[in-house]
Length: 405
View 1 (cartoon, one colour):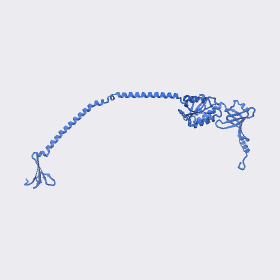
View 2: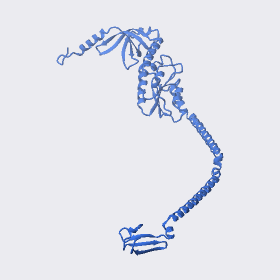
View 3: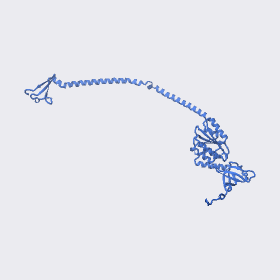
C-alpha cells in the first residue's frame, strides 16, 4: 500500500508493472506492419504493429532472420498474425512485444474476414436501399477524396469539367492503400461532411489487388461513411472490384469516370433535352389549340348557333296568334259581361221603387220623430203627425188632420 508518507519509488512502480505484464504470457496478435527497421549486422529488428480499425499501435521486436524466413516478403501495410510475449522495459517505461513467430494473412483469410464484416453490416441494415440518399441534380460543391495526383483524381475532375465547366471541387488528398489510408480517409471525410457547401462526396481510386483495396472494406471506414449526412459516391477500382464501400455508399460507380458522369449533369445534353421538351410542349400546345378550334368551328356550324334567331322566328307566328286569340277572348268576355250587366240593370230598374212611384203609387214617411220611417197603417198617423209624401216627380210635406177610414 502507498500513501503520501510512504510512496513508491519509480523503480518499484516499473517493477510492479513489469510483473503484471509478464503474467500475460504468450499471445497471438493480428495487425498491420509499419515502420519495418531491419538493418544488416544487427541482432534485433524493430517493427510497429498497428490495429487496422483503430488508431492504436505497439512496438514489436524480433530476430531479423524471422523476417527473412517469411514465405511472403513483408512490407508496410502487410496483414500479419504474430506470436510473442509482452515485455515492459523498466528503464524507459515502454511496452513492446517480443515475437517468435510471424505469419502473413493469406488472401483466402482476408476474403473470409471481409465476408464476416459484410454479414455483420448487412444484419445491422447498413446496406439497406432505404438508407440511400439521392444525389443533388446540380451540386454546389463536390468533395473528392483520392490519391495525390492520381489517375482517378484526374479522370473525375476532367470528365466533370467537360460535362459542366462551372463545376467546383474540394479535392482532398489521402493515401488510398496501406496502414495510413483508413485514418486519413476518415479524417478528410469528416471535414467534407461538416462543410455545408459540399453536397456530395466522391471517394475515388483506380483498380488494384485485393490487398490494395482492403482499406475500402475496413469496418471503421464503412461505419464512418454510413454516418455521413452528405451523399457519398463510391468509385473504387473497376467493374470486377467490389469492396464493401460500394454497398454502404449511397451510389456505387463502376469507375471514377462513371462517378463524374453520375454526379455532374452534362450541360450540353441537358440543354438539348430542354430544347426538345420546349419543342414538344409547343407542338402539344398548338395541337391543343387546333383541336379546340375545330370543336368551336363545329359548334358554330350547327344550325342553332349558325342562325340563333331561327327558333324565335319560327315561334313568332304562334306568339302573334296566341296574342290575337287572347285579345278576342277578352273582348268576347267583356261583351258578355256588359250584356249581363245591362240585363241586371233592367231587372233592377223594373223592381226598383222609382218604377212603382211612376205607376201612381206614393211613399208616406212620418217625420218629426226621433226615428223617421215609412208608414204602412193609419194607426201610425195620429192627428197632427208630420209626414212626407214622395211621388214619382218629387215629395211634399203635410200634417194629418181629419178622420181615419
